[in-house]
Image 1 (spheres, helix red, strand yellow):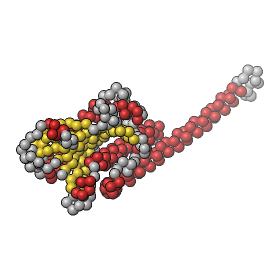
Image 2 (cartoon, rainbow, N blue to C red; image 1 turned 180 degrees about the horizontal axis):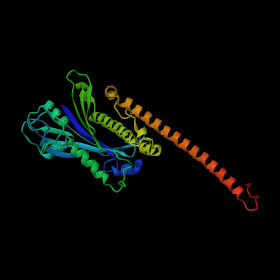
Image 3 (cartoon, one colour; image 1 turned 30 degrees about the vertical axis):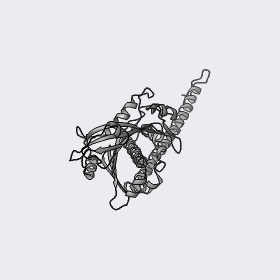
Image 4 (cartoon, rainbow, N blue to C red; image 1 turned 90 degrees about the vertical axis):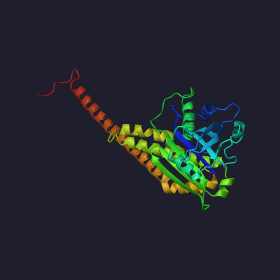
Length: 340
């Protein structure tokens, strides 16, 4: 009936990207469960899924109580971009007002069962609006806590390669009334986004939840990449005329970010038209290409300026050396005195 979740994206606190082996060790969080590693087309490592049991109110005005589990995992892309992703789904009320033993809920991972009737539209509105209240389900806190836990790992040197902000994407997937897939992506604040997916009911029945979650994680990752590279460009504007400092401020974009833009690499083929629609309306790829071209142009100008400065310095050095040699020739011992 309704699936929703929250994804936090940020930078690992390590001065250099980690190898896939070290990332696998970092994300080996569940004994006996396998860490998934992908090397192509880009390094991507995913931790095993974990469950958190919850018994609280849903984010709706009706304050409906629900019991169940939230599924969450961590992933690292490119050796240094970490994502904490948590999600759950609301099933129809099967036993109105009747609680079950925890074993019943643990046997249905990633599912919440309301204790009484629930208004799904009200839950969607309340969840996407954010501002969690005490006693109300806070999926984002689970994602944030998972990232905070690994940021303190001894496998990291706790030195960030550059300043960046952690971003949040809150998403919900509901059946489409008209049977047509659509997506509404909204920038709520500099670090907060919301995504509402309306999926064809027949597609939603056959499409794995992991495919929807991966779609949302991909959007969150690439929105973070674009936001971060724009932030680096903004900071570079604070150093007009200082080419070496400008190049230093743009260097992280080249070393850490520009090679990671591959939005279609992990999206399920069935959902590619939906990604293309979101990308077209939000101009993500277009703004990315413009930003990358701008960075390259700035670095080219900096390189040209440094080369020109080097040539000028070399020419000045030649002039100084020539003048020095001539002066030494004039004062060499045994040379005739200069004419009066």
